[in-house]
Image (cartoon, rainbow, N blue to C red; front, side, top):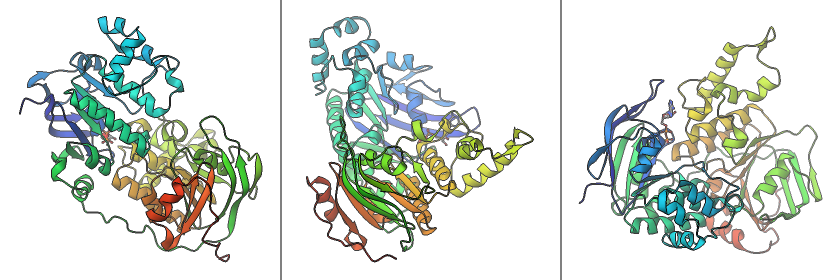
Length: 501
Ligand code: ADP
């Protein structure tokens, strides 16, 4: 086998605060392969990618390309060596066109060439991408913005393409398309390294895998000679039962909110909601299943009180607060520059708690935050660490812990486990089930049917802005829910409302 396109040789990374994020990691990415990098949140995946890309320097060990030692002090060094990276948060100029965004990062002759739309089309076609070069990037759906990011990373004929959790923001169909593009890139001899949490995606699309666990490699090999249970076990370090029900049986209580023939007008790119009837009771977990973009965000906003119904009614007592775990934890859920403690206690601090003689009582804030960190199993160096430094799973645990701390009668969560590893997702679902047992009405909007079946008491299905059906108890199965997600118009509910508990 030729020397790997890029490899890490006994690389360790200790952050300035003393945390050892990588511990003597050796790993090779081969040309013409899709190599999946798997691991729990906090395992060190982003740190590893950032070292390859020159964002961080290793504390020990070295990076080799085609067998030769390279030193990447900054991304420009890595780019000069033919490495492209697609970050989780895009770095696009949204008001610019596709062609302009590509030209911005291209060099020399390539940049001049990219002024011609035909050249842009030809470049994109080489990777099987068919986008209008003049399209304004900000107008494109996220999946296509990501395609532009990938093309940007390839503009200088990169030999190595690094992608940090590219599928997190994608629907299953979009993920298929992403990998179709990545296969084209692989065929051109590029080494493709993909960070992901999704074991099924890795089994379906990758050639090789490496699992990181707590800063060390915990297994590496060919996809053809592994299987799901082995990967999951390497990721979480112990065998997990799949498909088991989460939380003890529950009994639904009093009505806390009711949608009566509630409708929201369709808008561009959104189907609206059409005559939705939904009764929410205390102490139950209600799942809302469906392919994203079928009225989920409209339903979220309606239940959250963020928008009004244009027809029908939302009936609730004025005092019925709804605690929210929004879809986008970076923009709506967290203040990334604030500390873990400030994020956890944000609402309380703003409401005037933790004041002593007119000043903030930082010791009390720290102590309270510490208790919440322990209860929610948030992995952080300290409560004073900026939220930005935490992994996605731990950031989500902060948002959830704060919402639970609100003790509202209704907890409304949107895609609560998206982008989380198996263990963090499990912990989040367990907390949601526990909240319902304690009397909260928990509404989970998710495109992950398996997790809804495991945690919900009943599941309603959204399609085209209609609730196309409801299943509950033993009737909750993929075979029952799947057709409801794709059928065009609603059918009368087959499961009658149970008598008021
Ligand atoms: P992953 O990408 O696998 O979720 P990361 O590489 O982001 O993991 O993080 C690995 C560990 O290093 C985590 O525990 C995280 O809190 C810590 N970490 C990440 N960045 C920093 C930083 N700048 N300073 C201190 N610790 C950090």
